[in-house]
Every structure is written in structure tokens, then in C-alpha cells.
Length: 112
Length: 113
Image 1 (spheres, chains in turn green, red):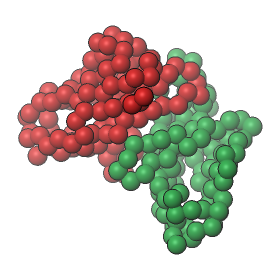
Image 2: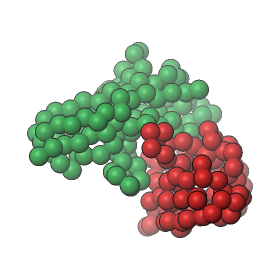
Image 3: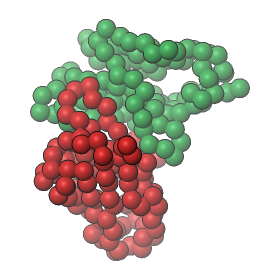
Image 4: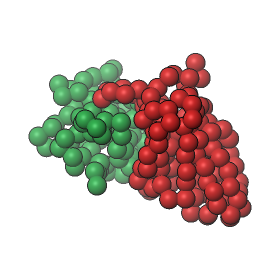
């Protein structure tokens, strides 16, 4: 069974702090990687895709390490509005590319 | 564009009752999915479809059936509801291809008494 593992947290950090989440995946043939964000009692929404070269979107930086099979998300200058659960998501290659495997999520609480 | 919509938003059933959850998308995406989300369990795939007229089982298909007669609609049926099916159900749609985003509906909160 394909697995995506995350530390469930919660991570409780003060406003302005930098916080990092890691995620490991079991299938070395995995093709695409994402971070989704889920607010309490809401649906998941795409935060950012994770590319081999790493990518940045404002305060958010995502990195992929294929050799070690892990993905990271770094949030700088945390805001209260960043409080949410962050889901690591992986898709497979080829015939399995239609199916996304979700981690159980890491909960972040940003404290005033 | 509404994206992905789900009907109903909330429902309470008694054990043994049946119901159908409707998912509709206006993005013309090929792939559609039904998930359930329970505390501590994350999102679990129930059934999915890779195109009109096709369906396949996911990780937890028992007790559920699905149909995709039209590309824009994906129905999830519970023939005889059980308390273990109390959950939040999310529908999703996605275009084919590796880095395409998966769009979720707002969810249906189902309680089975």
C-alpha cells in the first residue's frame, strides 16, 4: 500500500515565526507532489505544487528530495491566517496518475 | 463557475435507510472522486471515475455504490446506512495529467443514527 506520512502536530508557533513541515512517501515511482491546505470544517484547497527544483510562493517554500523520498514546506513570518491543517499529496506515474495519495495532515496553530 | 458542488450539505439518517449524494462539476474534468474524512484517519478514497460511464473502487468501497452517467455528475449511494458511515464526504474533480489541481466540493456531513 502506498503511504504518505506526516507528523500530525499540532505545531503551535507565535506570529512571525518560521515553521517547517516534512512529509515522506513510500513509492519511489511517485510523479507529482503537492501541498494542500484545509481549514477547519472546510474542503482541502491547493496551496502549491512541489517541483524537483524547489519552488517559492511568497512566504511559502516547497522542496522535494527524490533520493530520500521526502517533501518539505517552509512557512516564513507566520500569520494568524496560516492556522490550518497542511496535507502532503502525491500522485503516481503512468496508469496510476489519476489517483492522489493524501497524508493525514499536519495541524498548525499560529498564536498571537 | 461554481467549480464542484455537492448536495446535500447535511443529512441525518437512521440505520438501514438509503440515500444518494450528488456531486456536480462545471469544469469539464475527466476524473472525479468520492472521499470520506474521519478524525485521525485523513482522506480515504471510496470510489473514483476516470471518465463518463466508468467507475472503480478505491480504498474503502464497501457499503457504497457510484454512478457516472454524465461527465459532469458523480453520484454516491448508500444502500443501507450504518453508523460507521457517519463521516464528512468530499467529492473532487481533476483534469488528467500529473500536475493538475484537484478541486474539492464543500463536503456533505452525514450522521447515521
